[in-house]
Image (tube, helix red, strand yellow):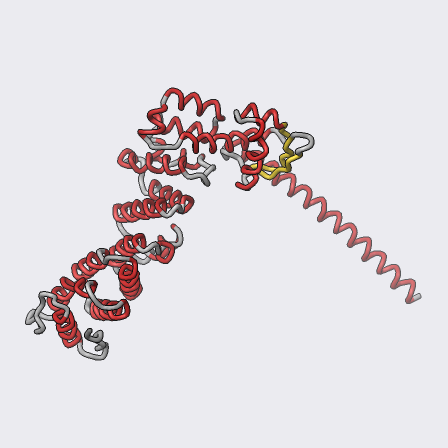
Length: 391
């Protein structure tokens, strides 16, 4: 097999010709001669057949060849390579298998990093990067959070429509990777890109957001979704009614809804009734814990509609979530609650927090005054002792 071309010190036109020769040797339909139209046409022809190296050759050779193409792309003025970059990205997203996909991921990452931060093409390269990352299970290598995502595009933010397209892709991929918390953050960011004027256009995104949040076994704080404009646009519809139950109601309300709209829950939106029951029991327990620092096993059994032999295992599951801090008294058949996360955080919770902070401030002021008094007494005592010694 022919060795990979190494020609970084050659003029661009000669580099392109060496690539032509290389791909011709692989059987690609390309001439070995330089194009009379110039380097852009050379690149156009080369990129058109660059997937020929996917058919044979080891990963090191392929990576070298792809990096050579990148090295030419990034030194030509960007306004002359936009279509070439898009074509290159499309070719690389079609690489078969994990090993080749990983090589293409590295090549596109090199291209992304080499482009000027203010270049609009960085968005397009990144979008394809995410697609390849999904295929090779490397999403974490290219995405670490919404803040990082926005920061890397800060010098030249994508259009609203472009960002929505990227966020939808990320949401889909993160869900498939079972990154529920990250997926939820992406969806909230997506819904935040809509305004009151175009919130109605976000209907599908809003429904997808609610369904994903309800289905995620690790998402319990659902109240913030109600403030999103696209979600508010769904008020009065069954999906919004179901969300309200998970936000503020107890288990009986869900059971009534399920009895009346079983087909909607299981088929229309595709939620698991068993998983819904599990989440609603946890949420119901949290709500009870807000006003009951002590709960008997009988109360838990009745309120959550579980069997006697399921109470202890349920409490253990609650403690694992760290949503509630409590201690189980098996002998006394009760649970002692020390703290719980609130299901909603509205005006009453803000007032409670204000009162708590005011009490802390008052206590700290008292401690501060007490320390000042102690310090004054110590200073006075030290002064008197000094006077006695001098005398």
